[in-house]
Length: 198
Length: 258
Image 1 (spheres, rainbow over the protein chains, first blue to last red):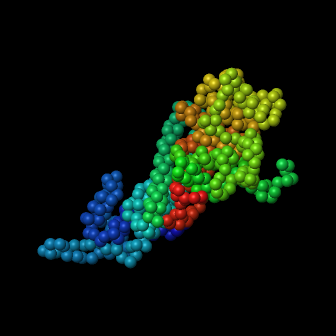
Image 2: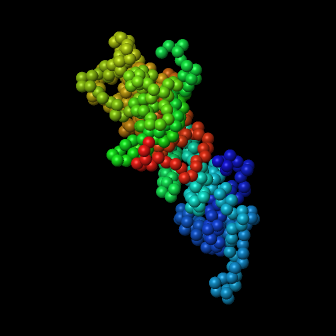
Image 3: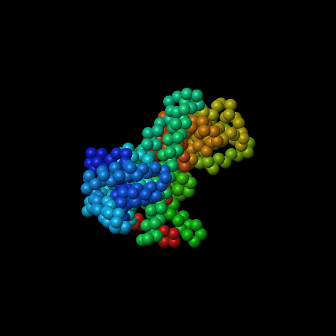
């Protein structure tokens, strides 16, 4: 659990913050195949699905972040139609693969919901399975811990005043239960895949 | 066994412990793994909730914990003593004394039997006089929130909520040190369900009874300080620190010999 132990202080800047998942997923896509920006935005949207609402302007900003960190590099390459000149293509650097592995293993302290894991799964390579497993197991522990922190309400049970609190608690329990079920099923799928390919 | 004869190990042991427990079940030609490498410790007077979906092995885990079934690998100990090393008679005595199991299908009312008879009978089988058994039964029913009037009701015609409470009273009357509950609240009304779960926690806390509760609903486990999730026979708890899992993971597959 390398990533978990390091916590916030030891985590690289690009892994933190709201767009960390998208930056991580972009690294995975660039590693798979060097692409220009528009293509990367497309591939990201297709890979992660509609729920992510990928905005291509954001993608250019995220690519710039990754360039600043030296995790990707740009090359000018001629377009297929030579008359149209060249275009910018994003390529991996020697740091990219290790950075992707690190991101997959790292579950941020407040990353309680599955979006980040979803992005990790979307671009993980087979060699990332141990890191994925440990990130999933850590997420499961966090869900369980959050569930233990959900205390039964103070109000007189069954009173009107307790009703709202009961509903809210119920919602959180349902959400955590769904998360746990998803993690458990994902781990089972990975294990069954591994058993089939052993 | 007198206190003088307790070994060091038994004195300092947790109330209940599972060490690397495996359980397999034969289903026709196939052998399936129900539990794999399950380890847990439950200290006297503490509580552990186990969340798992249907057929995740929760009931099997509880049956192993109370000695109704024995593990195929690893060991289950109660107060430091291996359940597998005891005679079936000894294990049966545990279940009439320090260990209680509450399950939805454990309700077997006899015709013509009152609630009081039902609970007192349970105390009586622990070797008490009838008078003492009735006194204890009344106290247990009172604590389980079954009003005095209901004590003379017939067991065959109880409402689900009362039935659950009578089952709890029946368990309490034997003064258990471990209370295992399989699906604590299969009650139709949400409020009844929550009140019953709260009652379980309160009673266990005030009497220092260790509580092992399994449910397919996380909300039924609220208020329990320690939770674990059971999936594909594997137990993971809030107490676990990150474990390194080798890949591909070795799994006992179908058809493999034990």
